[in-house]
Length: 470
Image (cartoon, rainbow, N blue to C red; front, side):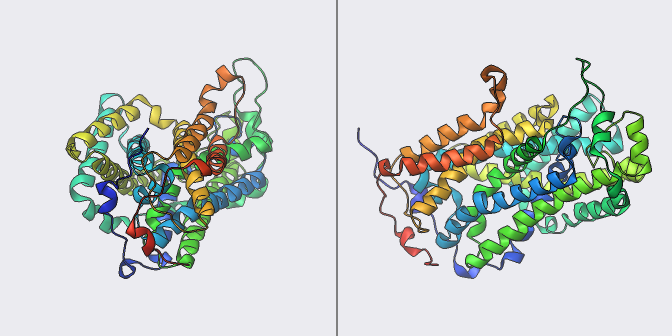
């Protein structure tokens, strides 16, 4: 079987981002990533696992320590090496990915898949933002669904038409959730020393079986946090290639990730942990436990920490700060789809994606954050793993695009994806792979290394010779 050795037009047209367009880490990479993690959907769902005590069931120390490990893993495993590829070449993800998945294969992985998954992110944004807005308006049924539809449509229209205006004020909006987190910590930190995870677990209503409620073990908390955080970050980790194109040197890449990724994750989820634990150490929190009304979402606790009227305004503010994220998800989706399906009108393709996003929000599927994050982690975990191994095997120098569909990349993704989605079929399998997105990352890297001798040929590509040497 012959292999297509021609260079596709999308590769021929690619131009590296020049040095004059790059900036220090504190002006691009760090604040942009930090804004992602300050999104209230990320930190507000983090503590609650659907089990008694959530991630606090083994104590605050275990939860904080697990978050630290996950944060460092996101930086060193998922972000850093892809970002170095971007910094050295100045080329975006869908170009750099062609060395791992092939010149033709790169269109689909990571290109088209990135676009599709952004509509999943849009669905999560629509659901979370609409529910936050609803604390102010109290809509139910069709009016609530109408808010969801308007939110999604506005985001897609802004992405296709007016994203430059959204970008102008989105730089400062993350300051709002940061200020709210600090205010919540200030109100609850006094109760932290009196927090008792056993009391939270005991206050949880017993299951239908009548057995005493049981929380996660320390390892269960660790595995859950890895699944949650890595699943949330997986696509943003691969997008580190694009962030790297704006970095001047190795130090910008490292500092941008350490501050914008690792530190931002640790501080936001750490804040959510301290707020929730601190609240249940206060008199108001203990009274709630006595009534058997356990709530582990710090955003849902705002009415108890402040007042119901204040909580409505805070939720409204958090929803408004989330709108730029919805626009940027839509923009990434639009750019990916326009690149891979250039002959299709983007208003049609993105319109279809918008309808799907709204449907996922209305149905409530998008509200199951951990399931959505786990699927995204399963999809992009092995992509990040394969690209990281590509960097290691090439000794830090991007080889250039490989012909057609590179079997090493595609096999690593297929195996990693199967591992990543396994928890969705745990009932049929009789077991669950813990921290599946992380295992998918490791599997993707190992399979790529094992198959590194059976890759397709590297195509002639002048841009591959223009990368920086550091």
